[in-house]
Image (tube, rainbow, N blue to C red; front, top):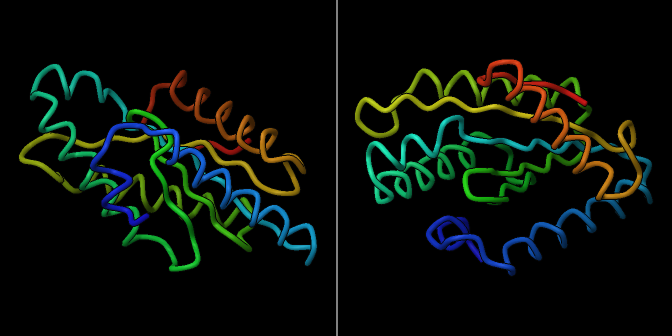
Length: 163
């Protein structure tokens, strides 16, 4: 499944299965070789307002452009997938949380500086967790990133927080 296929269609069970499979592979590899990895959970701020004000076709185009930008902004070994309606997840193998914070901030800042569609500003909030610091089970790691994302949203959006 390529990135375009992931972004064009709405959330589909196979997409979550793809991410979960990649997460398990990376978790097993990191456990076996005593490595670390980081997980970034990213949400487009005020995406509902974009859909309401500009229409769902514009919202879908924005999702495609953000997805394309994310893929171009990470290493070939990293994984990016759509995780929810306007959420993306990035899995960064062999990356400590401190380095993931740098990646997250770079992505957040670049997206906010570039208008991907017309004059529509793109702001994102990002939550970061990592293995083994935030858990040894995939669900714990995802949950910690989700909590960090929630804090970023609560504190005003357009922020990157670590667990």
